[in-house]
Length: 102
Ligand code: TYC
Image (cartoon, rainbow, N blue to C red; front, side, top):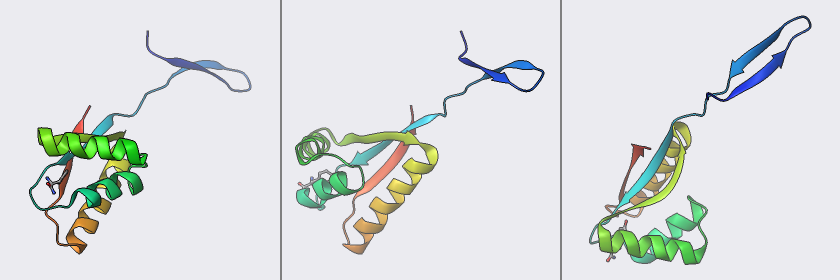
């Protein structure tokens, strides 16, 4: 049941297993100081969410304490987290986010 692909070389045919990369959730945490519109802006710009989806996710984090911004490969998740933390630091907001293996 493993996903395979046929690889045709000039005189050999081999079955090559195709592996999906492990995926990571980017989780954002609530706090009492980061402005709501800043979180919405981050979700729109770094996570490519529509304004409507960004507002929904922001309120979910605000009410439940945490929320999922998206699911990515490790390198992309790390890069997005670094962008969020750098932007939050620049504005002196305590916004935190982390990653969790799916
Ligand atoms: N709780 C913040 C406020 O009331 C808003 C907020 C939402 C902060 C989501 C962080 O990840 C967050 N201004």
